Image 1 (spheres, rainbow, N blue to C red):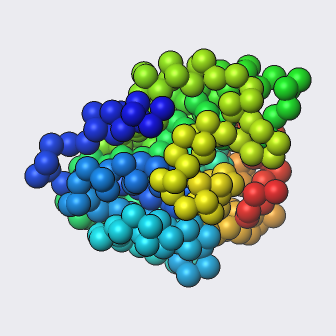
Image 2: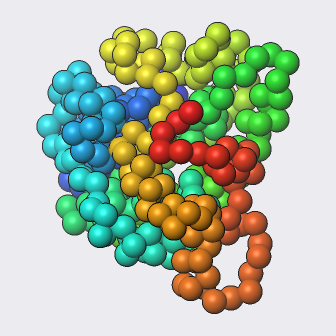
Length: 286
């Protein structure tokens, strides 16, 4: 498993001498990418989003200490007055009015903007690990964990990968995802329930395979989406609900102003596995 992942990271790194970055949230997935990258190259810039209250920033500091990272740039959260323009930019870039795509897309948008300003065109990210290795849920054996996994993977083209690609390309930055390697897909397809879930822990295989690579508190950090861990979801939720309407309704209004076309395809607003939870979401994970 570790050898497969290292090959995947190597495959996606640009040539030596060409600048590269890593989007680092302090979560398991991006930290594992950083762990491998930092062994292979020193001239890498790591980007994280947050402020002093962000749980991601606290975790990133632990990653920096453990891996000895040098060039780590903290991108501050936007001010309230910046949100209207930024949300319009993200809705335009992603062509979506799904609240999760937009709030996580805003985080990606700001990270990519910083990478562009730093002259970096290629970044590595942790996307794909949650879909392949069961990182979103805590299932029991009788739950439809296989079906849910397959749907999440099938939907990535218009959910997480659409958000990642379009938010990055708005700044001419190319995101590359080591966890989406064909070898890792084949490996993860062969895992059974006990290799995905154990008690209240998910992504069991990943956590076990990289035991010792990261400190225990990072290796076992629960799934925290980038928008929550950085604190940007709270900003977005408060802003979009300021008029007493739902996030989706406010975003749809923005979307309709930008795209005055009569298109009602679910591609522009749907996230099938999580839509019900997204409608009920708050500023943090429940």
